[in-house]
Length: 353
Image (cartoon, rainbow, N blue to C red; front, side, top):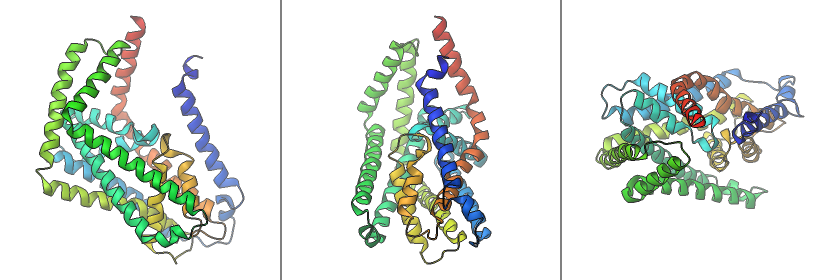
């Protein structure tokens, strides 16, 4: 019973309950998906297929970016290895608060492929920062493109406040990662502090031995950070792939828009609103930003999905953008099984001491 009263389990049950509740609401409530399926509204299924393909293309680009970052110094790294790493990361990002579980599991998997932890951490950190920079630029461009639309919104103050908070959060996270990546003194102090704290609560034993290994990996981490900026071709290729990745992600909403029979809004308008939804969702520290993502979608897309189709569009988008991703990537969690088993074994050892 104590096991199920732990905060982790309570949070998991709460999130699952929230997700189920939201799905049921958007399906069964008035003007929900059930009403749409029983109505005479024409549904263009070819556009739904395009939305599904667009989400899969997003996953391919995610794998391609990882491949470009790792393959450069690891000739034995195959594209299939990049696919495994990408899908494992997408799964853990989807099921952990603020997407914090993705990178650690990816580092573990890359280490099992004989790639140094410091090097893998560095490249994934650089990938994350590139992702954040390009997303920020896309969001700025989206605000400029749709400035008239934003100012004409009946809830203009709330929209501007959410956008401002989203930008502050996004830029703040990027700056913190930049400081950690390039300030060797600060990153060393931070890592050593965390290591000593873990030793005090008996999670880490033989702290001196661990510190020696961490020092080596930190040196590898900062060396890799310095080296990557000497490779402009790699960064250019990764930037183009990341930009295409965002286009594929945001086009899902446009294809859903067309599937429900609408065609007056341009792809740029729909993708801009989707960028706002992602920006707002990033502030919510629960798995998948459940609740916030659906709320953001209905807030920003209410002027596009008319005639009682808004709830249906939100549910379909959420299914493709989140639930389908979890379903497709869940089998790849197998590659982190050894890591979770190892953590459980360590926990049992601590209890018996």
